[in-house]
Image (cartoon, rainbow, N blue to C red; front, side, top):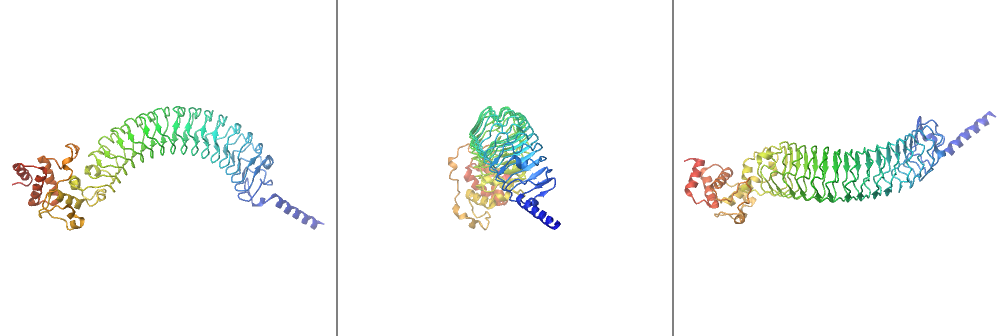
Length: 558
């Protein structure tokens, strides 16, 4: 009799285990983890005293009150990565101690009002990666301690008024990657603790006045990757504590003077990848704590004086990949704390004096990939802290200011259109081989000699490098005649700026400069230099033989 009873009890136990599912596969102590066990419902024979239940990555489709009522001590419930399409309105009503409820990556299309009622301790609610298309008013009404709400990656199209009413402790709201086209006035009404709002990657087109009113503590607002073309002047005016504003990859065309009025605390502002053509002077005024502005990849053509005024703490300014061709003198003069300035990939052709005035802390300046042909001497002389200067991929033909560049640790000059003629001779004279940028100006030595022979002629007394013929010297067809540059007669009198010497003028002093240049190129033998002087005379038109003789004696003596 005893043997039969024992056998019956064993069989009964086997039947119970089989009917309730694979409970032995769940790892349990004070918490239970039943991850990826193929469950189609919530196990009902787990220890009732557990505080955490992880049912992630199963096949559960419905949640009812009876599924969870026996686990009243739960503080953490993870139901993500299931197939949940329906939740009974009172399903979680007995879980009064619950602090975290994760329902992400399911198939929810709607959540009824009252679904989350009687969860007074809930801090984190994750509804991301579902198929929700609207937010029912009152669905979050009874969550007085909720801090984080995740609604990302759904199909929500709008945010109705009072959608988040009474969430007085909410600090972070994720609504990115939805289909939201409009943010109604009052949508965030009375969210007195809200600090971070993520609305990026939606279809928002306009930011209306009052859209972000009554959010006094907001510090981060992400609106990037939308379709925003216009920002109402009062849309952001109440965000007095805002520190980070991201508006990149939208369709904004202009920045008005009152767009960012009253934003006293922004530290970074990203407006990259828009369609901005114009920034009104003063648009960024009165942003005393702003440290970074990115305006890269827009359609800006001119930087005016006053565009970046009253920004005493700005350290990084990105203006690369625009259509900038004009920078007014003094446009950056109010940026005394600026450390990084990126102007690469624009249409700048000329760097004039005063362009980089009053930038005492500037450390990195990028002007690469522009159309620069000329840089005024001393254009960078006031940038005493400059460590990196990028001038590569331009159309620079001639450089002056060797001493100025040699003080900068990292200078990039490669891929320019060097014209190594006598205008480069003063620069060449100072090349020692020690500056890192020298080897980026290719074939300077031989090309200078070729150009000098083209200008001064060669009577056989000047030493010619053996490889000149390979370099194509015969293409100059110089022979015994002096070659005068084809366009010399067409150059206006003021063609050369005051900071560079003209090699086509008629003054004796200029002719002597050519003699000096020829001396450094061809050596110091009197007969050779005087031959060059004779050719210089024929170029510069100096008919006063006594003056030239005196000039020669001043160099070599009697």
